Length: 357
Image (cartoon, rainbow, N blue to C red):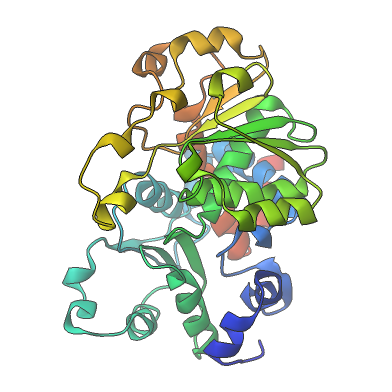
């Protein structure tokens, strides 16, 4: 791996950074996982298939024991400097299902960063003890900095971005793709609505980037004026010749699309900016009501990256309707993250072979 300065690295486009994030013997194969743009269609299809096999193997004691023996000699650290329950637990269980002992830091005030240690030095220290670092951080670019530090180290270990600032959340996008594929049968040619806080929602940014891998997809961005999707995403879609429409009318969009991806209004960013009213937490125009199920296509799905607050009618948590998939979507995260870890550590082929026996 060619060493370059941090300034040179940050001056590269995301496309030009990707080879620096790959495996030594195959730069196109993800090693560090920072961006949704790292994933090609073949890799996505293979990860989804691998997740299916891991899920099936785990249903039996023999299969679960086999999986736990794959990476029992490796250790993982989950460094979560920003509040998270779902992503943290999903990664922890994915790691443990592959046999990896785990350690967790969920409050950097307990680490030497509270004494003024730099993130770079903390990462270098942690990498002395573990074989994988999964990190979630409120600062933009934190995951890139950690991956860069590992590229400069004598002992290079993978860094996974579990959510960085308002940038991206690539493994959430992987589980979203996995859920869409299992729910719809295929993603090519589908119409997908993304609703809510699109400006600050890193999940919709990452999912939008992954759409480049599917043919004939059309995206409907449904959001309040102040929370519309960023111009950088729209420019990306234009370059990829992906059709998109912007709207503030959720009710009109529902009968048209094959998938509705709801997101919450991320009030915490407003609060951090000094806002004091709670009006920004809720906009009734962007709430999925129970009655909307009757207007959805019979072959469609309702997703949410969670946590959800009030943007989906709470009654939908208990309806028996195969189109309401956000609880299954949540569980899918554990399987697709296990598949990603298995691939990065090169145990995917033996898992596939065992599943075929």
